[in-house]
Length: 282
Image (cartoon, rainbow, N blue to C red; front, side, top):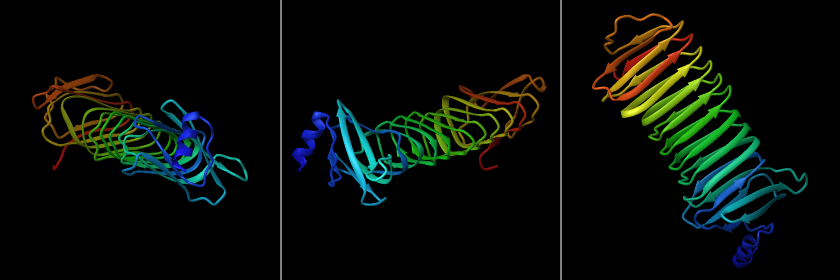
C-alpha cells in the first residue's frame, strides 16, 4: 500500500484513499488552498502526513506532488466542496501553506515556515520556530512561543502574542494588540484605531516601533533597559516612569531622550491617543 501511494505521489497523479497516511520527503511544503472548515495541526516523529477527518465518512483526500510542493485537496463527496474538519499530524520540519474563505486553524510545534491567507476565522499558533506569515481579515490571531520572523495581520479583530522571542511585524485596522512576556530584538506594531499593550524586554541594540492613530500605547518594560526613545504625540498625552530630560514637549513635535545606556531604538507614535511608558514591577 505504501509503495502504491509513493508511486502516485511521484507521478503527480491524484490519490484518493481511505488510508490517510502519506509519505513525505524532508523539504516538502504542504499546500491546502481554498478550504473552509477547521484544521488542527500537530507534529509527530514519522516522515509522513496523517490526515483524519472529523466531519463524516464522505470526505475524500487527494494529493498532487510537483517537486517539493505537495497539494492536498479535501472534498465532500456529496457537495464536492472543499470543506471539512481536519486533524493533521506532520513531521516537525514540514512547511505549511493554507488559504481559505472561512478557516479556523490551530498549528503547534512546526519548525518549517507557516503561511496562511484567510478571509474569516480564528487562528492559533503555538511553538513555531520558522518564519510565519499569517493574515486573517475577519478573525482573531493568537500566538505563543514564536521563535522566528513573524508577520501577523488582522482587520477588526484582536491580535495576541505571548511568550515569544522572534522578530515581530504586527498590524491591525481596529483590533487591539495584547503583547505579553515578549523578549525580542525587533518589533514593529501598527494599528489604526486599536490599543497596543506591551509587556516584556526590548533587547539591547534592537529596533522597536509602536504606532496607533487613535488608540492608546502602553509599554511595561523589564530590566535591563537601554534605549534611545523618540515620542511623537499629536493630540494625546505622554506619561513615563523613566526620567525624561528634554527642553520641553509640545503636541505634534518630536521628543527624544535616553533610557539607561541607550543603543536600542524605540519609536512611539500616536495621533489621538495616550502614550504610557512604564517600568515593570512599579
